[in-house]
Image (cartoon, rainbow, N blue to C red; front, top):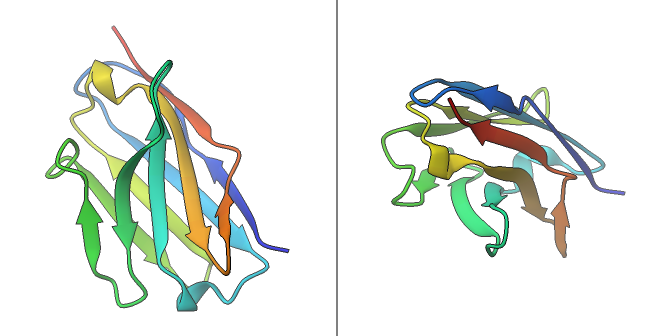
Length: 114
């Protein structure tokens, strides 16, 4: 059974940084692209970043240049380094993998506020 567990969220001031982690289990991790999404209150879930099996990264325009996605295949981990955070980055952040079907983690709350 595929399972994803996010961690690392919290409260941070504008301009600050956070590093999110996502631990995967139940899959041959290195064979799958990994994704981060986020959902702000009263808004639809939106794409944030992807890292492919080959290490190619793709970002939403809203986070490009501020966020960095990375992965550690040996540890079955995917990370999201978030710098220069803005209040509009406030959301629940989710890790996702498609391994026959979409599997989502439970999410981790990120709040950017002074």
